[in-house]
Length: 88
Image (tube, rainbow, N blue to C red; front, side, top):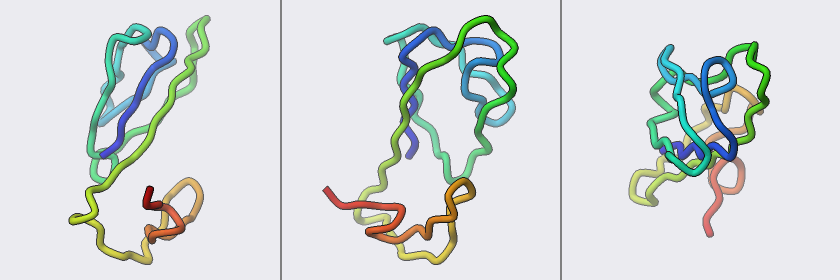
């Protein structure tokens, strides 16, 4: 699961888009939780006068983990423990 937390006002084209839908949020108002492995998500060119600051993180229950040589799109990291995933 992906968790997305805006640290500034997020609206219009300065926000994250999930399945072609923008997510409007005020700072501290919302934490968006979504299935980032199966839902198309990303950003578009920000044409607003405000930059967005946000943080995101991903978790997977240990019971759901399956080793995979598939790689992340952005960094090319294999979905393996010690690579993409870490165990606290």
